[in-house]
Amino acid sequence: MRVAASNRRGGLRFNVTPLIDVIFILIIFFLVASHFVRTESREDVSLPLAASREHESPPRKLVITVTEDLRVLVGSRAEDRDAAEQMIIAEANKGDEPFEIRIRADKSVPFREVEPLLIACAKAGINDVKFAVVPE
Image 1 (spheres, rainbow, N blue to C red):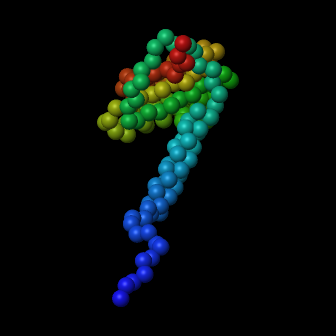
Image 2 (cartoon, rainbow, N blue to C red; image 1 turned 135 degrees about the vertical axis):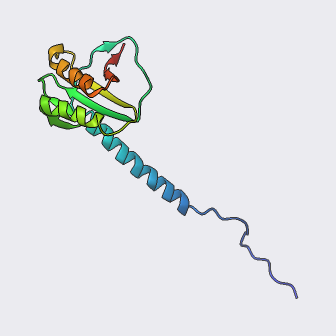
Image 3 (cartoon, rainbow, N blue to C red; image 1 turned 135 degrees about the horizontal axis):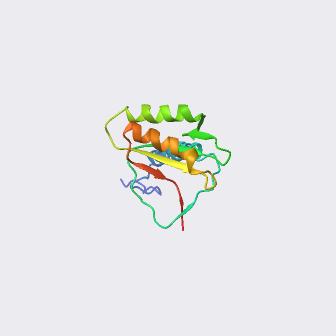
């Protein structure tokens, strides 16, 4: 007795469930990552120009922003100058791994307003202090 051939094709089927899971995780990752980038550079600061820059970044970094109206922000939080200096010292004492201070000061801010932050870095033993600039 002969069995009728089926019109159904056999073979492998592509399971899209893992693909959807991976794409969903990537979407969440990029949403969270973009949130951190936005909070770090929330204040609009006009940076000075520089001829060269370094591309290397250590694992720990503290970003200090000095705005045109002389407000000091540590990360994305507004602090007074004394509190910012204390935060620099506290961050330096947290661990032994490399640590960087990045100062984003508006180009119209006089150096005398940034100097106390540099002195606090020196007192804390931080010698990796960089100024954020716009490349030429």
